[in-house]
Length: 357
Image (cartoon, rainbow, N blue to C red; front, side, top):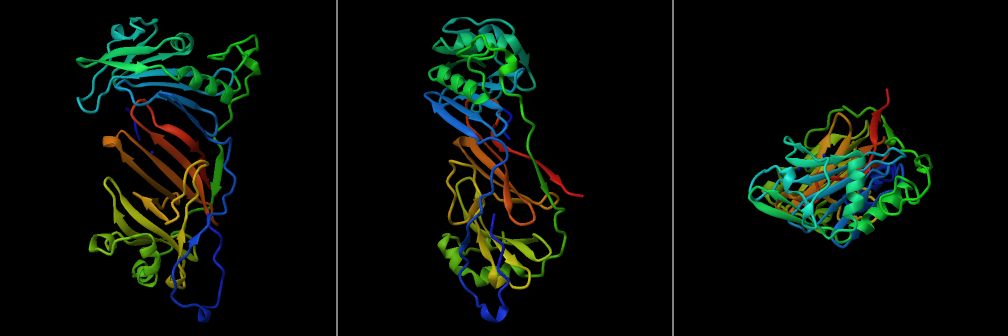
């Protein structure tokens, strides 16, 4: 399977009034997300996720088989079904088309093999007809290697109906579950991916030993975040220019089972003692980590983009988020999740980042 990838401004207080102190978290200003609110719903064995431009993916979860249904928004929104034959524990395999069964009977035709993607795919009108038929069935099965994989369809009807509702299809000829006489033109048009314009990233040099100075001044913040003081943790410390006047500091915090946690701070270039812990904004319905620790945090200096994520389930489930610095604060610019049962990452939120000239 192809798995992938706000802060308030600091007050300019006189240095004479400042002394080393704990670094309280900066609460993000939470600017509005661009596009529609992301949608995530679980219906029995099925998970539906629609992103902020209403590209929707429904996938089975908790089964030994893998089936994903993706549909684009708009009157002519393309539909794609992927049966994934890859089994992580046994190695890759391509599902033979003749092995695909719906409730034990032969599946409708139109499938094609994608040997590079190690999957079977169905698109267009054939895909729409297939999901309408599958909505009234109980299982889909197929061979993967020497074993037969079974996909439960419990909850599929509810997931497809929610997809139709999110894309404005109910009552039209394009609807999956409740088609009607409404013309395709009645479906809301697809919207482009929103654009987030940001300034050119800073390239100023960081003063030598800046990250170490922040660590020395803010032991209380490290203790609140339950950070380690081991040599391995401190070896992860680094700092980069955020703007001409501010520096972004990464302090190694702690090792998880499958990732490494980093405490993120933002500091005035003139005084590392005034660093403040950064709480990055999350998408709606996601819990924010009040400690400011992020997993597997990475910085792209060419685009001023932070990314963080984690995985589990032997690498078959997890997620990744990214934030872009807009000159004043970090804005959420991407979030996806993935788990066993789908052929693609599940996009929740995405924007196109453009650098101002």
